[in-house]
Structures are given as structure tokens and as C-alpha cells.
Amino acid sequence: MMAVIFCLEGKMGKAQGIFQLLLQKGVQIAPNLNKIAKQLHANARRDEALLILNATTESRMQDEETGKLLESLHKGQSGM
Image (cartoon, rainbow, N blue to C red):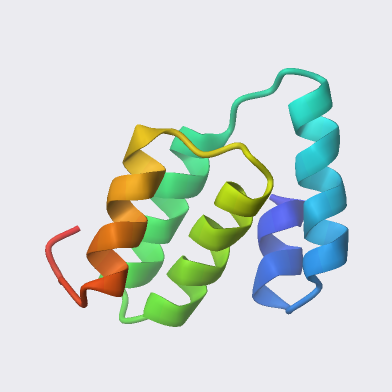
């Protein structure tokens, strides 16, 4: 959750550090990050959802759903 908070505060370096630590430890949190992004988008917080999904991808923690969500947001679709 700290990585998500850092993303939303624009502290991407700190968020990436946490994501990298989780990746090194083999912790897969993409499903949880996807869920947070969906909730943000559902509450008209598209930009914040994109921050979370982009950080997930940049950290190489994404899963198939992450890619689909990103594509949907970039196309401007509301049906996440």
C-alpha cells in the first residue's frame, strides 16, 4: 500500500523502490494493484488509475489484466 500512496503523491522513485523489493522477494501484487486501479477509475480518478497501472508495468510486475486495463484506459473506455 505504501507504493500506491507514493504513486499517488507523485513519488515514483520511492514507489519503484518498493515495487522492486517486492519483485525481488517474489511477491505478486498485480491483481491487487489492478483492483485499486479499477476502483479509482470507477470513482472518476482515471489519471490516478493510470499512475498505478503504469508503475506496475514499469516495475515489471504486470499481469495480463494490467495490460488490458491500461489499453482500456488509453482508449478512453469506461467499461473496466
